[in-house]
Image 1 (spheres, rainbow, N blue to C red):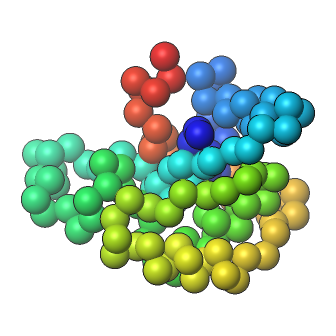
Image 2 (cartoon, one colour):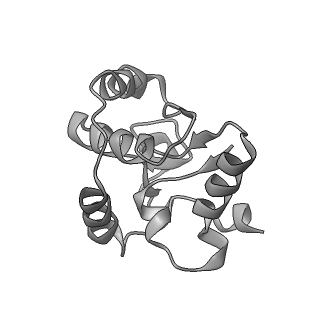
Length: 131
């Protein structure tokens, strides 16, 4: 179980190299459970957006449109993973299931394009998960 999404894959620091984990798992025949596929990034600070005002119960800010959900699912499922975990908030689960039911693999060019589009976004994976 590890985080994987286009924002994380765009990061070049070794601590974000979950692709190596995926590659090793596949080499060893170990199933993979992907978390944070639908994470947009960290929430704004509590001073900017208090916890009680956040529209979702996730500890990260999720993508929340059908188009973004589908784009993220298609991207992650195109990485030769075993399973993708739905977002943590129940309000988003049916949208994630719909994205999965409409899965279309992304070719290499589409994957690279999405990574480049999101390259400068903040990682939705907190620092403490890297150590």
